[in-house]
Image 1 (cartoon, rainbow, N blue to C red):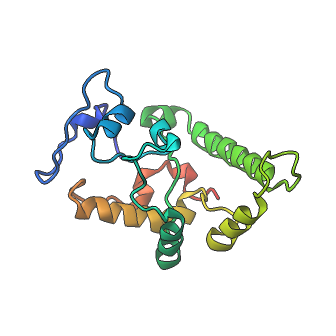
Image 2: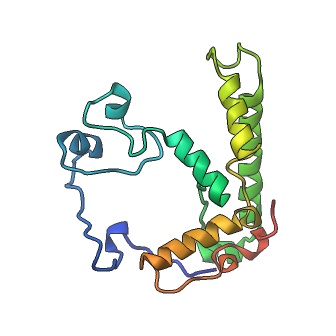
Length: 187
């Protein structure tokens, strides 16, 4: 595993081509975006301004579903949703924690998929939900956010390549060196 050192994201030594500034203390990215003081943001969920339809806030790709589907068809890559990390010293003392966490997240995801795939209209208060679910399965398969190093190896290797190409890292680590050895074969 790669040694971990505590540092702020802003303390990263970035190549000169990147100009990064901290957001002022107390400032809200949503408000800065609306005011035009931020050019763009990358998010896991939508800002309220976007949901409200603020005129100067929009997606980079309005047809994002088609763009994501085309990229997946071309590359076989659908973005990894989460990565769970733990301190190496904790893993060395209690290696079972890594596999237990993996299994717990697997079970949690399985339960979420079961709820989503329950076709009872009373479980999900949406009228037209079956067709989008069928379309997603057709394009991305049964499990678009698959778990495990092996099932994500191509995506991880591609990410490492991009990080090296963009000079965010200076050398390419082996994928297996980034994960607890007792989790490498979990599927």
